[in-house]
Length: 168
Image (cartoon, rainbow, N blue to C red; front, side, top):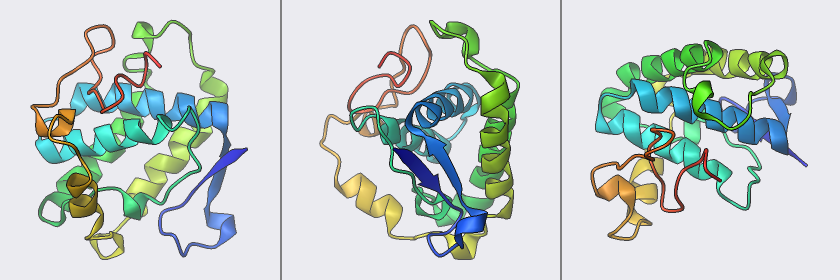
């Protein structure tokens, strides 16, 4: 099985990327490691936690559109630039030393490059304004996003309702 990723759900197949389950899991892990190191605002932390949650469905992610992430309209431009920096930092192997394996950089770099370009191309008009309130409304009161964004002691990643993406 593979995850299919796009900038917008309506993008033609030739603009999408298909990534194996294993590749998707490693990709999300390195993005979350890098983003957890860089995040400075709650909106940035939410984006990173959301990415981490995508892996936690029994280790499989069917893919998503960048426009469907929980973007906050008021901070979209700063958050979009943050995600570009996150892809760059993941490409520079930020946080990889905390893993109990070394990701295959040769396989990962094209995926990270696609995500970087996708974040560069994403526009405020593309985002789903209902994604953030819908995601927040579905949370339980003890969800880490609602409780100060705790981190994994070993990997320093932001925790999700199901723990650390790198510990799984």
